[in-house]
View 1: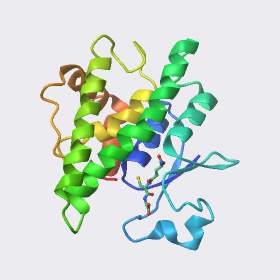
View 2: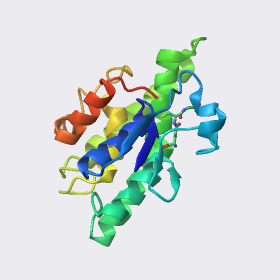
View 3: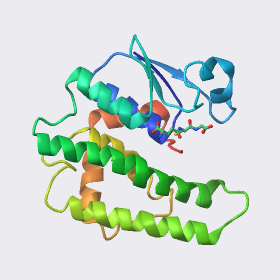
View 4: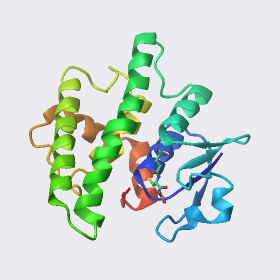
Length: 204
Ligand SMILES: N[C@@H](CCC(=O)N[C@@H](CS)C(=O)NCC(=O)O)C(=O)O
């Protein structure tokens, strides 16, 4: 397998999966800070000009959560047998891509990168991020992982934005269940390796 990526949240998810499932891969860094994702070589791989992209020997796959699902189906790692749980897992992947990712991404933009500050936009997205934190904390109050007792690709997908909550100016002070979940994932050998791989710099 070939992973094209950068030290960002969405590449991190795929990297963690490959390390968890012990899949051999070669990493090709695409420097999105210098615009390499818009060059003709990379656009031939993903015309959307975004990382990550995974080449599985046959096809180039895009969209990190779709890559996670496809890798889980191929390797049998990180999925859940119970059909109810499987449906919940897919719902978490959509929730991550449609709700957590966009709002946390906007918090990062308005708090770290925007050249012209917009306190209203920052407050709005921080407000939603705090609701997401509360929701996840409630969800984790009676289970170890998002889909029950087993660690799955749902946890891999939701982890990275939460891992950098301090960098986003968010607090987990009132989220004891989420804090426990986060600590457990942070200390997994594959997560530790993935963090070392990127030197612990995760940005969008
Ligand atoms: N929904 C996509 C998002 C991909 C994405 O936004 N990638 C960012 C880095 S995390 C990127 O390549 N940005 C470069 C650009 O937009 O020019 C996924 O989950 O893979």
